[in-house]
Image (cartoon, rainbow over all chains, first blue to last red):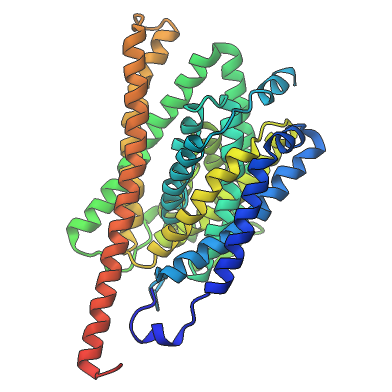
Length: 85
Length: 363
């Protein structure tokens, strides 16, 4: 959570969030528009198994970065100085 | 392989209603997983099946959304110092073998007793394990809540102290979450059981997290965070196995991932605002509610196997719908507790800050 005086010092990653958000939307658009071609290749099995695995890593990196920045920009952040006991 | 090919041709058509539905279920599942380390999968698989997705494709696609989700959750919680990567990987590897063995048992049961037999086995595993482990976890969380010692450091159980005191030369490994060296001969069966449960009821964390807390002596926050590493290791191996047979519907997996990555980040943030016993509370509550959901289905499968009197079609439909509704309720109750605890934590922090400003005149 960015509250009070911290708010003034820490810059929110708005630009990065927008960039990753656009990339994420682009990935999902391609996935849905080309779904019949994609499922036909991804469903072949065998060594084609690499395709869904690589796709999952790619989506998690792009969309994961976007969602992380999304909450930060909204001001929802971890509590500071949390002790892990 | 013929079966597999015919299943692949059954990839469902997606419309905006389906996509929105999967996104929302993914979000709630992710929120709970980010908080307790696992928990969304038991609703996601039936949710996909309710859209007409064949069972095996639903399981495979769920698995393929699970490992990237767990990866992002683990990275987020590692930033808060909550993840014991070594413990997660050691348990994850033995969990992988548990998954393979669990899947093998499932196949044999299905061959011998058909779908009803397999469903009965899954439901019975749900009911017995959730009653014993879920009951224990919830009781422990409730006792902490009632005692008012919520701020006290968690103490290792007697069994955990015993496990940590055993020295078996050549098998000892230091784990930072335990701040102790323990024998991997203890972690192997726990990981194996986690994997077997994951293969049976899709949520290995219901064994993995309590085992890390009560048997190994890990703090709740670190246990639930390290479970994400186990889920990643298990999910990656499992996804590849299913993908080799062409069973992963990448569209379903990625749509659920879209929602769950919003949820898992929020759930992970939530852990920094709550007292450790809340992890046990949320997990225990979900486990006990899910237990009732599965118990409702036991008579249906018993009747299909001819062990008890036949139950009418109408009653079966009512039981199935009620069971799914209770399962969804379990997830929603879990999500509600997480959000409420987080809200209260944020409020308390703001109050603390305001007091600080008043006291010291800081701006």
